Figure 1: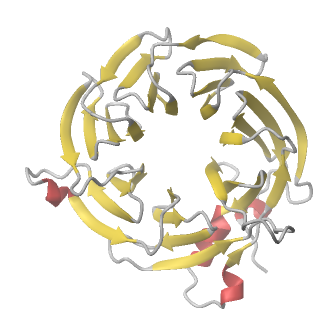
Figure 2: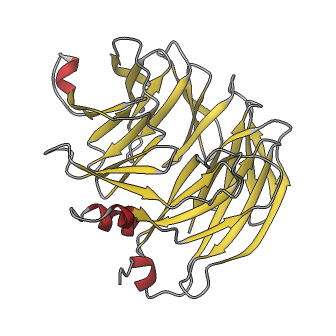
Length: 344
């Protein structure tokens, strides 16, 4: 029997908090007990945030930072259920918010990346250098440098101490990097495109940009999203197919797994697809979860430890390559879910 770390964890208190943003500008808060003998939703509520669709939720301690089409970052204290104000100095819809150290970063349709100090929400820098909207950005854990990708077919490495550009890497053939991923203790960045991904050395000392790219790996179908677990690069397609690459620095071998999906009871409907994903991790409890929202509104939880263990097995039959859900739930709302985040 395949015993996962979730099931073997000693603690019986495994409560995950989920936050969902909606098309109607609401935040839904759900608490789920994922203990092996429980696995149930224990509470949920929703409240209005904006008159416009939300696109991103960022969590910091008891606070939720929500934004989207209204170009405003709303700040809420979830412990007190209080509105704590807003940041309105961004022009364009916001699709990415990150908080590192004492700084808040935002990116989206605007060509710049503003940086606010968390203690007083004063604008520290506004990174300028892209000619198109920001598709994604990463902030190093030191908060001293970052990487951003844009619709202008470029990636910029930033010095965040003084807010200036270190270098700009432009792609040929109008390629657009959709996603950036740190790997190997944030020494390398993965550039994720529509149907390929590159391994990029952040600390390469070379005037030739091509020397910074260690590998270019093509994928057989369009990439929905990538993520990294234990330095393994995972490429997810929206049909639930998951490619888990082993030691990407040594070879390009991967295992193909398939996530269990909601069953389609209506023959006239298309198969349910992945709408968006989120990872939940707690090192003390040894819990790693892949959370997937499907197009029918159901949320499926998968044990990432089990996924990695299965991917390490070189010989298994097709029927064994399906990763069963650990738990699932449904918000049971007619409101369309547009984004999510979680913590434990």
